Figure 1: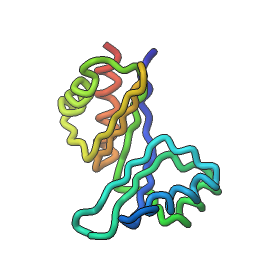
Figure 2: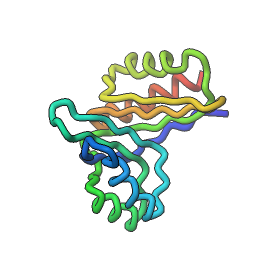
Figure 3: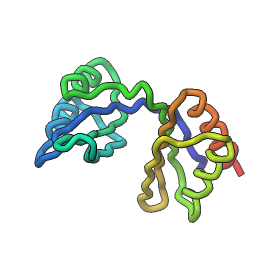
Length: 143
């Protein structure tokens, strides 16, 4: 099975760093029919009592409205890619090396595998870096 590499839009928002803080954001999205493929939530050390949540995808007018009502906004300064495909030993090192060899610095990276499948999300500072990384990944994974 080949690897799929696609540009994705990530939404971000602040959450209360307390019990139920994340649920308070995710529940309205679920009610609007959002099927999230990606969620990362973490504390903000520089802002005690607050955290950040990153989610994707948000599609269509009703989902966008629900995301905005939940306090999320499109992370316009974060240019992201999603890679999905077969998991292989050393894949993380291979894709990180391919991005580095293209002269691109990653702003963020997260990955997971379930069974024989993996999914990775990359974040970059510019659309140009996003495009360069996508090209480099396609080339590296075609081998």
